[in-house]
Amino acid sequence: MSKAIGNKLPEDLYQRLSGNNLEAYAKTAILVSTVDTGGWPHPAILSYFEVIAKDHANVRLAIYRDSSTAVNIRRNGKLTMCIIDERIAYYVKGTVEEIAPQMSCMPFNAKLNLRVEQVLSDEANEEYEEGAYITTGIRYERPRHPDAAKLLKELVD
Image (tube, rainbow, N blue to C red):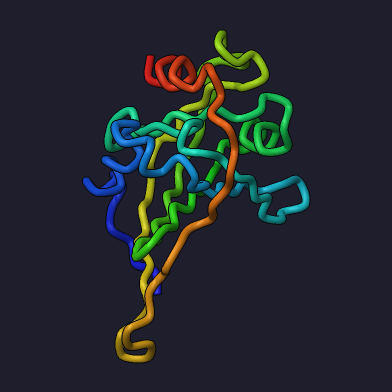
């Protein structure tokens, strides 16, 4: 059951998204969701190389500039990030503003800022599901992009 824990990233989530320990999360994906014109949730997957916490209230995102996700964000400015991994599940809701329609290091990406409005934490209810917990997040395999360090630097700047 999820519970609201505030309008700032808790310290453990901030550290996870800070970019300081990317190797630990290099194969873990982050699910984001926008709302399409029909009112349906529109999911998309980002890597930890495309998401970085600027501070506890702002998260920078690199999203394909012509994607449905970017179009939805430009239309209504809303996004939910789901950070799910072993023994953690956070849902970060916020408003998104486009900082740049095109990044210099990866021109196919737009640079966006998610202003955190609500953070929820989710875990099994021990009363009904004793001992239940998340064992893994969404995993993927991809060779490291040669400009990954440039991307992260540009997101923070």
